[in-house]
Image (cartoon, rainbow, N blue to C red):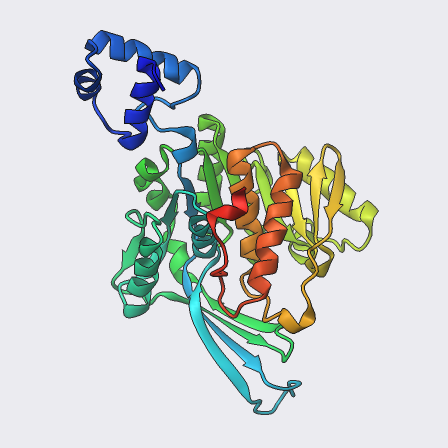
Length: 361
């Protein structure tokens, strides 16, 4: 690293907000020479304009739900209409929050835009993320409402039987909130929005993504909330969902490969750029041109499986993490997503503690 331009780049990497005057003094260059080097670095794509944000340091912004997960796992085959012995676990949850934690654990810079109460649960949820390096400064903290909750009832194998979600607080992530937190999204090329967001907020993010040429990833949260997607899907780079949610979006059963391919072509005609459909133990289907390709899920021995909560969020996070570095390689992104989901299946926590930046290698 001998050239003035490389030395300047090193200083910018250490402090993206360094002034041209400080750069000139550090390198013994005139301000005009510094400006010329910066202009060339921007042209080369090695920095991205003010405040000299490096591509590898661009944050992923996650927007959507945060809540406290409560999971009750039956100790034996459940019997309806009767009391069942169970074990209880509590952990942080919420699709956008889970994705943010996954991304932070694999080493990406992350901003979370969400809504919590000013109660003990909400403050603890934000504090834990901040210890992982997630920027929560743009979050809404409500004094008059509790933090959301998600309660899952699992059978003795750890499979989901029933879930109940109180996510009303996310309705406050309205268009006024989206506009207020615009500075937190300014440096991002990748936005991840879950469908806990109100429909007008999602539509605003779509328009913003088109205008700023940002990558907007939309992640489904449940079949009933698929209606929050409007008739046009323009501005959405990638939609991640499961078979049930895709069926709900199109209002028809999708039981054959031909039906799935037709579903993808329908969504493509509405402006969607790419699609990933989780298919449980069968892995994923993902768009490749006009076709839907498939990838098998890694084999997880039944003896090592704990439960399914959070696996879908890990899948989405892995896809985004890989695309952050290689935006066009959806196959490789799905492969990383499946790996992260498999790790999550093997823990009682909603986000695996085994995740690390080594996975991105």
